[in-house]
Image: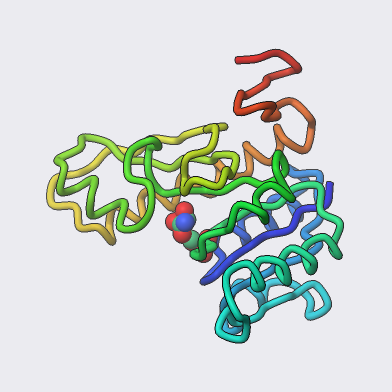
Length: 201
Ligand code: GRF
């Protein structure tokens, strides 16, 4: 399967995908890495011809940036598009264009803590556990159908950084497992519902 990754930062989730492919545990190829941050280190993990990055500042508005991103993405002809630390909101037209093929990894147990600062919010709330979710992307932020989640305990004295690290450690295997199921056609999303082996869950 052809996987494209949208990333804004360091790209440890992208690295996990690259490592799984190299290890033979994910039958796929990373055909493109696209970013809204031209200096994102994630870009350096693939060959130059597989990179696309533009600053949104160079575009008139969100729709113009999204259209350019979407055209570049379509040029890579991906089967699956993974938002992995992609920190820019995707507009409705973009999401519709790639609906059903677009997933995101989010560092909380959705529907809790959509958006930013998930770990600080989990700690403030006194939650006993935290985690990560892989979900299909819909126009509403972090609101799409959840495909899989992983849980970790919150520990006494946790800081947002310590918790983020513990969650990140489960993000990587969670994302790889999710992609393995998607690539194999075992899970899909139809009309807002998760399908497993062709049947609604
Ligand atoms: C991850 O925690 C991801 O869930 C969140 O941003 C972080 C990205 O990390 N949305 P990386 O760039 O994959 O290392």
